[in-house]
Length: 226
Ligand code: ATP
Image (tube, rainbow, N blue to C red; front, side):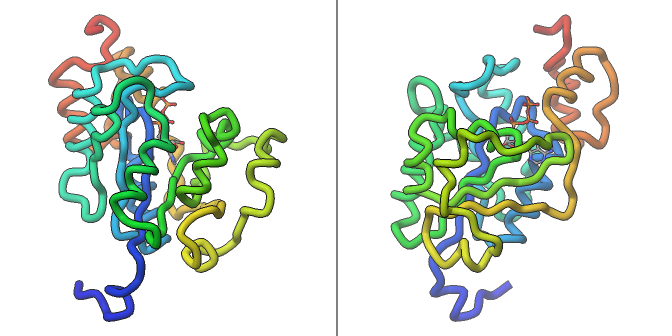
């Protein structure tokens, strides 16, 4: 669809959705599509972590997680499988990734770091959490399988940042916090997908078909295949 003059002149709107994607599932992908719609984003960079500082090592090799992510995205408009954290050494820090995206899209870009509610709860434990807000907005996606009161440690970090509407977020390049309840909240987690695969149970309709086929054909996440 042709962009209007006003749209063509507006600053780029970009999101990063980082994660382990071990493996990518429909909860991630549907969230990314709906996030793009809700914020009228140009694109969503889905960035698999080489090694997450706060989590156990992923179950399969980085190349497999990336291959699955690419298969899952397929030809979905506006979603990008972004492998930049694999080319950095050491643990993957989101602030470094956001700094690279900020550099690429410029100071006026509306840059959003999107994360699910479970990941958000631990934000104060991340490295340089204040720097995240100097680089981007933070958008928290509600998950039906994760609900908990906000920890006190987040209070100081978030003070004065929260906005209620997308327009307020998009009025500035970075620094705000927005909570979003997307239309198709899905109670799908990679943990449950891995558990099912390990037991040999069905993962149909939890993963995109192409991802399911690849996982099964290569015996990924099977108890005996590790
Ligand atoms: P695990 O069960 O292994 O912890 P996960 O399903 O939470 O994995 P991650 O790769 O850790 O997947 O998630 C990447 C990002 O996507 C995180 O910010 C997470 O909160 C978010 N996310 C994951 N699943 C969903 C879902 N079903 N709905 C909304 N957001 C999700």
